[in-house]
Image 1 (cartoon, rainbow, N blue to C red):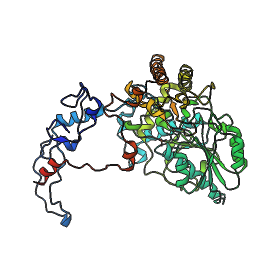
Image 2: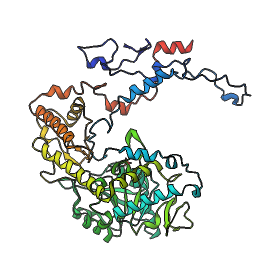
Image 3: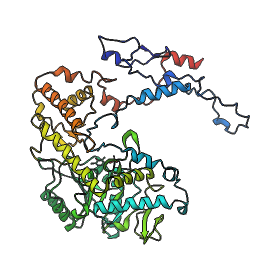
Image 4: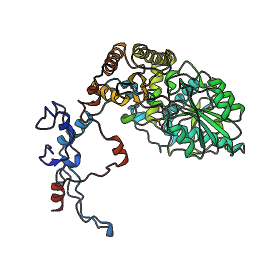
Length: 525
Ligand SMILES: *Cc1c(COP(=O)(O)O)cnc(C)c1O
């Protein structure tokens, strides 16, 4: 048990375990302050505001009226500010340091984007405003659509999906609608390569397709022969990520598209890794029928704890008519938002969201595009690929890359074979990285290699930052090979919490806070 600032016995954090030999009286470590839960530090009688007594009104709640005080924790303003600032200091973010998560593309969010998104003309629009009062916002959506269509070489774009996974749903629903229009509802199978992100099979299954895996080659890429073997009159589509989640460009993508189209099926591309090919390759040229774009990955809009996603879906000529509403259409110089299926193509699959999408993210993404220009976007992709290859080249003598010497795209995949015989695992490496001040890379994904470590530096990192990261990663690999097991098995030693029982947390989550005994007794008084 530790004493929190209010002197109440709070549930003891494991922090004292961390510093067995150097316990502090407070549980704090230097100016890093251990923060208790709001319920532990708050007192129901305290408030940061001085509100007048509410006027007496007739009670209308009948038997639903509350019988006892609700006992919400109250804090004075300075306490409330400190509580949230202290918690925020436990966050790791892209503004804090390198965020090498593979697949998820954590790149710098330029401040210019934020400034633009806060312009009152964009920041203050309401989704229920009449179209005639927001022509600028609609024009912005139209301009962003134009860029996305140009960059992908596709026919149409549905802007409203709210994230990548939602975009997948949109694209697959368009495919389903197209099959229904052709009277081919019997096509129930969706092919998904083993290396796919979990959202791909989940999306297909959610709307009633049956998922069939396509095995990967040793390097993680898809063999068109394996696709040909599985494609037939029962196949609706393939969902393929390119560049794939092993960081490799699917070189046979055109042949795979042909095999799929020859069999009357559709090609859904997972565009989460579009970051690597913007300005270099147009997916329309590769035979793609639908692809989502994660604005929050490729086009630098904040995500994770920092903001909502946006997952526009580009559609080929074969699917464009099924685009959901609302849809931006431009007619000469006039742009308008088509809200209903009438007036547009009758085939539209309807509405996927209440409103038009994430306006703030549109503004940020377009700011990113306009400030880079077409040449700058191409360079950002090139730099992202260059940075990943720099890491690959500087680490591959110590870490094992399943693709061997082959250059990667925007992310580099290592497996755990270099750890063989050390007793140290991928998870141990990730935990030791935390001690060194790095957010770990993506681990154990993709599933096609053993003990995966997927590193994506993005274009945001400078040469100096990469060198620092590489030096630390080299030191870790050498320590592992030299048998310094303690450094890994005890890691993280310096984090606010050490290793948590993640399995138990997932299997038996504690979703309700229970007042410790003394407090419960107080509340009952
Ligand atoms: C991030 C990601 C998704 C899902 O996108 P969300 O925006 O997180 O829903 C799908 N596929 C791949 C390969 C991804 O990296």
